[in-house]
Length: 185
Image 1 (tube, helix red, strand yellow):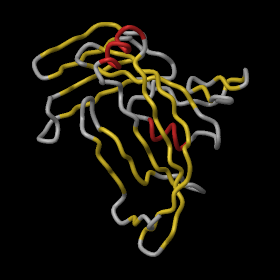
Image 2 (tube, rainbow, N blue to C red; image 1 turned 180 degrees about the horizontal axis):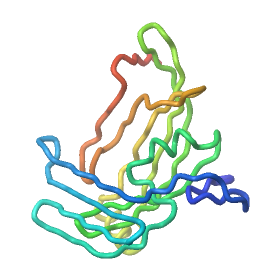
Image 3 (cartoon, rainbow, N blue to C red; image 1 turned 45 degrees about the vertical axis):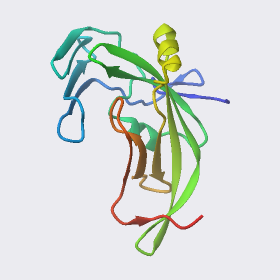
Image 4 (cartoon, rainbow, N blue to C red; image 1 turned 60 degrees about the vertical axis):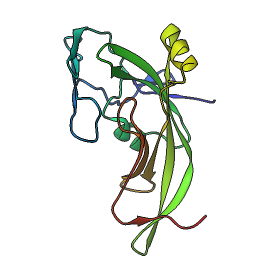
């Protein structure tokens, strides 16, 4: 797989500038979401609270340094070209589970905004649930889904498109800028 970037900041034995998730508050409500979810966690205290419909769980959790819930696009925009990264995400059912993630470029795609052509790097975010829980989930066909992001190349990297579920057990959605057109392949 080659050299990996470490989201916690160690690269080649040298400490680098890094992103560090300090606190998180996420709410899912409305007709598009089958369950009402509210999750908060805080790195300084190590505490979390998760409410899924009428079930609540709270407590302390070990938060790895390379946690990237809610900041995945920022991480992708700052990856060094050709260097994959590894990290973690937390998901709540309301019990917390830690997913291992691999973030890597898959290739480049052309897109159009009006008549202006652009190029976007297509990234794969692969998630895996480890341990016995992961084995059971895999046997039941409930592996965490892959998500793809398209980020513009060149100066001023920006979000262009996402394909994947927006929430746990959700359908695959496509979210893209208003106006881009994708040339025929």
